[in-house]
Image (cartoon, rainbow, N blue to C red):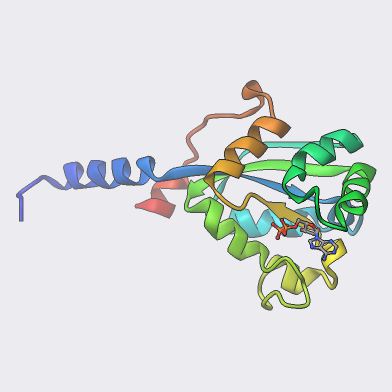
Length: 169
Ligand code: ADP
């Protein structure tokens, strides 16, 4: 093996992790907000080691909700879903971390809470698909689009969190 000093190995590790950092859009839907589940849901992302980089409470218009769910416009539940989201308030967030898009979906669980595993947010805290309390981007492209839809660039923070060196090594 190359004889690099320990500090150089650490730097290599940090660079490797930095290049894998990604951001995802997570929203607590009106049912989650009304049921008092904000702190419970945020704490699951926070304790995992992900970093909160943006957060705000929003009452989206119906047309904004339609934009957010445009992929589902042919589905029979589209209208009801957009009406429901527009009741608000919705807690819109951006979370950052290595693998946060895919792992965020794991924390959330399957779309239908009757099929979500126990231990997941929907598995533990929701019962039916129409009231499944949380949204999470399903891939890198949707994450980018949804972050841009819900947040202005200056609402996204960039900061170093001291725990990062303990989370990533
Ligand atoms: P996910 O939110 O897990 O990414 P989808 O993108 O398939 O799932 O659906 C978006 C949202 O539409 C779901 O979270 C749920 O609120 C709603 N939804 C999906 N399927 C149904 C359904 N069969 N009936 C009512 N609402 C549904």
